[in-house]
Image (tube, rainbow, N blue to C red; front, top):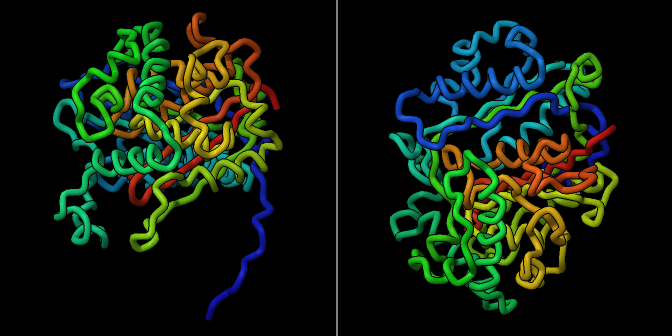
Length: 399
């Protein structure tokens, strides 16, 4: 029996939780550790950043990068023996942005007080390759797509080609996104690529799938990151600046049985939900961490989140529009996935980590946004050219 139109969702997590800890693994090539060891290292780092210990954690969140039985295997390995809540939501690289929202909701419901979120992987030294997953071969779409030559790269190239056809977007405009990321990465001692590049250098890099060049693509790195989300009561006891969760939205986007519109992403739904819950608009955002698997991912997401009109993304990013600290929308000030880090091919957690740094005033002085009060973190998981999940998180410096 069909339910018909469901009522609007009215629950809110605004002000219900704070980000107390954030830690990014400093290494980008890690041949001498296992994936569980990297999970443990980033977990310890984030808890130390918050001033907490494993014994304080009563909720644990992980996604498809976690080995074994996910939260069951990792909770035992990490020694988390007082858990009251676990979550293994898997929506690709956007999982960890969604996890913050889920943790805030669980905290608001009184299910937990200290939630730990971890990511780790080793695609450079033996882990799964880009787009890899242990369950890909069993997916219902596999036999209809993969045997015919689709790949992560070709799907993103399709999206870029369609956007160029519809709106006149150029390769030079996409290159501006890489230039901004590289300009920021030069100040990050841990960034995988620290050399500043020009638009011309991006366009002269090898074409990997028309119209995307090698420098339009993210890096492939080992590494990981972790976050600690806590209740307001816990936050008040910590000697740490804990940015507040203001809003969260998420949404899948499907292929429409072949009638997919390649010019927009799931951010057209996740973004408005997050902004409405937070009670702010795109004009209020001081800094944005935007998933950057490819340059086209950033451009389309900026449009879909409402920072500019659909089709105007190329003009919006031009002339240093994304460069910190005074661009139209300072973005990915750590260098992002394009230059800094894309641990285990899932960059969502690093987006939240850099947003926390900006709100705390702990980004590199050369890229720190003055008076950063509102930050946005957005993740994209899956493939922009087929099915994917979008998750949007809005954080505030103060409640």
